[in-house]
Image (spheres, rainbow, N blue to C red):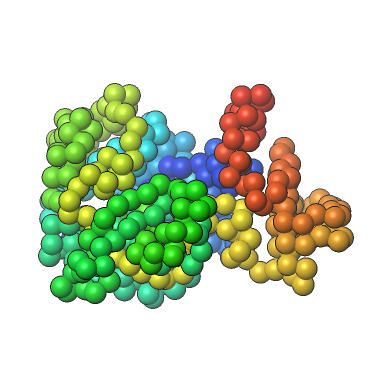
Length: 364
């Protein structure tokens, strides 16, 4: 039987800019079936957490623009559990909103917060880690994050350094956290890997409602006080107007920077369950099946000549002939064509900014 105090918050407001042009502001990555399995990323995420939390305890925080997409793809999520952000304000306000929404229902809640668009290949291991983590934060007033044992010096992930000497007495995989580092340069990432005490930051958090509320009060009182004003309004017809007003006042800040990097009760669960944030074309290439020339091709009428290690995404209706490319990304949508070296894919965010400035929002 699932614990009635266990809650899940799925964060689904991003636009997946690094996955442009397949991921767009109108249809972001979390609502796409990027592996061609007939299931979108957010559906996979929901299916994962209904094994941990009662379905009625799962909330989705997203942009107002994506309300219909959430309702279509997650019909088991009732309208009152779709939290609509009028403006993007990063993860701390998103989590604060969910905290107060859940508090109005169950002040004894224990919460897992997860992105909506990550890949988990070992679902059973993941479930075990989440259940053990939820148990740990139920018994200890800590903020728990999940760290993934790194397999390469990836510069696209944040890193967590843990204290090997300070291990949980009840779980040998949970450690005290020393430092957080945002996406490092390659040489620094290599040194992290060699040191053996760094993990990739998966962006998945667990805590009791009371512990995270206390942390907001201590480290982000301005954000907390805005949402606290709404006590008595959550789950009423007045909630929408209240949220619209305070989001205009609320500053944008991540939970990592606002709380996790400052608190002294942060722990990390070192795990390995086949995780990827599938945040870039390069990561999708690594995870996908390849042909004899190490190309990953989606499109029934694509023909490659003297090309290797490429990822190509085309409509089945379009004939594409590609010759002489190595290590390239080629993505064609109705109105955008991207041709980019895989090694330069971190520039895609800048490409999106430039296209928006030069040609308008239609293309992003």
